[in-house]
Image (tube, rainbow, N blue to C red):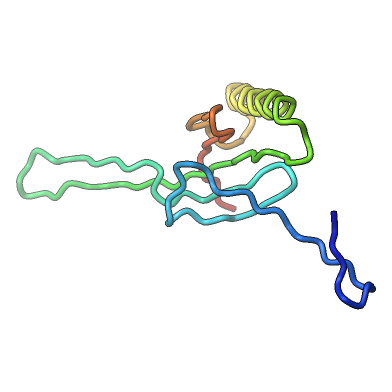
Length: 127
């Protein structure tokens, strides 16, 4: 419920900011927040290292960024209903992305799903 300022002309609406995901690290960047979810940039989601057998050449390390789409709880819904709706939407979105990818639609690669924390992890697509 909005509170009003002392002159009662301009209502002040307090924005609800849910806490970040449980495994959030300080190098994550919040890119966007909407009514349904927050989009986080994870700068070093996957790191691979290729070690060359020749001693003259150095090994190469590649770090890939990813996106975490976090669906946060809605305080206005009953917790049981909210959990069911969130789980259903998470499942539907991940299935949709995988089907699209399999059928040749250009979309981010699904890297992982964490239903316990309502997060989708996807490839970072630039542009």
